[in-house]
Amino acid sequence: MYRKQSSAQRSRKFGNWREINTVAEGRATRPSTSNSHMNQEINQRIVGAAPAGARDRDSAAQAVREMFTSIAPRYDLLNHVLSFNIDRLWWWRTARRFDAILKRPGARVLDLCCGTGDMTFALRRRAGSGAQQILGADFSHAMLQRAAAKAVEKGRGTTLRPLQWIEADALRLPFPDAHFNLVTSAFGFRNLADYDAGLREIARVLAPGGECGILDFGEPRGLIGHGYRVYFKKVLPAVGTLLSGVTGPYAYLPASVERFPSPDEMLGRMHQAAFREVSWTPYTFGIAGLYRGVRSA
Ligand SMILES: C[S@@+](CC[C@H](N)C(=O)[O-])C[C@H]1O[C@@H](n2cnc3c(N)ncnc32)[C@H](O)[C@@H]1O
Image: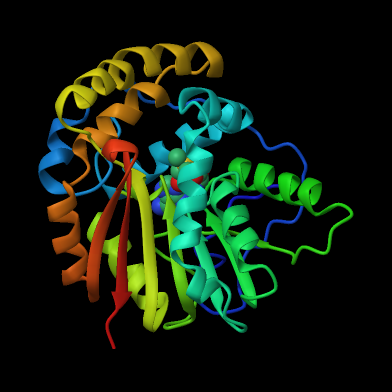
């Protein structure tokens, strides 16, 4: 059964994780806010996601969580349809980029904002018999339940190493300092209510020399960019709303990408948050791209 976490349960103390291993149906709630426009006031105060109606960091995070919870039942279908399945290629390319860590025995890997787990599964495939521990973390219980159910399905009759699913807020991770060798996040980081706090928290849980990989949407330029913007701002919200039956999340998506820092700005922020060798690799004409950085000693 799903119970809301108390602040004590959210404690950072190591070993106090809320691990998800059930596959029961979660309750989906509808977002309580209108997502037709971004909230102007919050735009000026917070550099992070700001769904319409959010007043501060906590209400922004709550709106994001409710939004993903509301679309969790159809998230995978929508993802694959709306991205024409290119998302699979992006997860695979991202995982492959970190082969050297993933194949290292004893490596500890965290996939933040793991949602229904596709990035986490891609990491496990690349790791093979390497990495000692691969964790997926997300703050939407409904998304994690689907990840756990998919893991059971994929693991049946195989010797794949088990994954762990942790319900946690990316801005307050329940892990000790310097615990992981790799932290990834696919299409989740953009939704954090405070990007700098998110980067600092990733840096905190990474061991010196550990790597961070943030895969997220970008805004392609030129003719391709023009066509893509029409698709992303008009077609995708209409189809997404139709298929999910929920108004809001698929209008929020293009707005949140527009709001996300440019690659140059994002690399500057990573640098400030104690990452070196920062880079951005565009995928598919820059529709998506991978930010990478190494945790400074
Ligand atoms: C677009 S989905 C991406 C899911 C998955 N990584 C993928 O590639 O399909 C974004 C996920 O980020 C999660 N998320 C957003 N903000 C979060 C936060 N502050 N802490 C933890 N998870 C968060 C949402 O619940 C959602 O599952």
